[in-house]
Image (cartoon, rainbow, N blue to C red; front, top):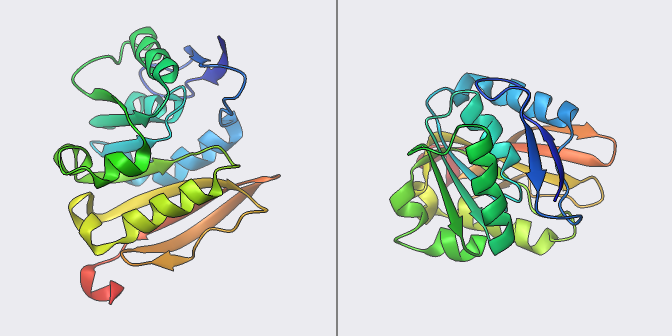
Amino acid sequence: MTDAGRVIAGSARGIRLTAPGEGTRPLGDRVKQTLFAILEPDLIGARVLDLFAGSGAIGIEALSRGASAVVFVERSAEACRVIERNLVATHLSSARARVVRAEVVDYLASATGATADGPFDIVLLDPPYAEGAARSAVLERLGEAASGRLLADRARVVATHDRQHDVPVAGGLLASERQKRFGESMLTFYRRRAVDESR
């Protein structure tokens, strides 16, 4: 196992997490601090969806800081086992957390998956940088009108990417609010628009 960094704040502050393997790219502390500083007004009591969850570090940070529930979606069986172990290590393995082994697009399309778990107030989208097509497909899916059942009113979506790969400014229900750059890494923040705004 490799190091996935530590929980920065909240009930699990300071606890170190493990990652499934060398291929996992954990967010640095500076990026996480900025991410959660921006999300903080919407985080307490939020339902959070952590897509391409990897080690679960982002969703665990959200739980530690007061999210009411987090659903972790990850296709790798080993990564899902690591998320479960990290939840136990942080004492967050309760009814507030659910780990789903699935392809992200399949999960979002499933009537018994995301629709049943949602609606979500915050969606965290952190695929491997090389998987730009997957990122675009998920953003497109979240922007579709049908995703109104997945996203709560005024929900926020955050996508990580490198600065060489642009992400859409808007699409359907989603409109970008801001971007933050950290060297080669970027965070793009979206807000769900009202239905009449998306027409």
